[in-house]
Length: 304
Image 1 (tube, rainbow, N blue to C red):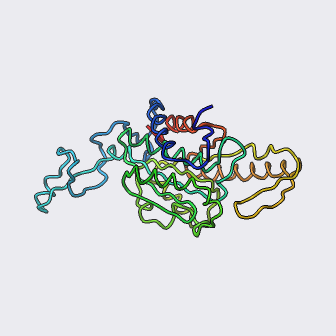
Image 2: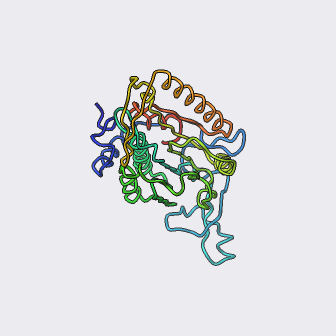
Image 3: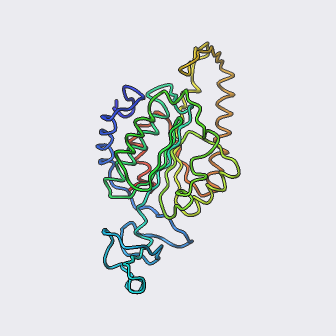
């Protein structure tokens, strides 16, 4: 069995995240896919280079191509300025990870939180290996971290900390808000591949407005991990614990059937809401190995 499918513990260590680097490197090559387009009929190249659409003008940085210096602005201001073009932003990525206490659950293999954290690690390693810029914002328990630039050691350390089971007993202060709202950094995000990893399925009108704006200016992928075996438990009595309290739960065939039907109805509505905002919805079962999920995201243009 794959060491990623069923890790020895849902709490991931540094060795596990190091192993993810190997799997990220051997995902293969992405097939040609449509890139994010701001206008109908616009298609962007998969190669970095000089594009036709200038996105912004900013002060020159040491890594900038000398061919893109705007000499007129440089002469007028006395400070070197560089033109940034659309195609140069094609391989910038934003990772949004938000785990609720409910994500620390699983009936087989591992927890939903673990699978999402593995995917985040694979995305991080793959982005670094391909030379892509990776910004991120992650939340779990009472913790929140973000960076507008690639900081792999810091990100991996946060992912490792997020796997700790203590966070499933914590009521996060932000549990009723979505990770993409009320954040200046995210509201200014344009022309990026945005990957959302979360077990949440709800938002209010304010959050929906912010999500619409994010999807308008970026290519957004929403990854959902579902534990289908949760609806296949044998009827009977179970003792459940949240780490603090233990309670007795009675499960019948009828209650499982009703729970599954309710979930499927809500999930269909959830998928339709995402599609209406032109957000790609990618649902996976918990039994799917994380490297297979990452390979699928590669085929969909979320990674390269």
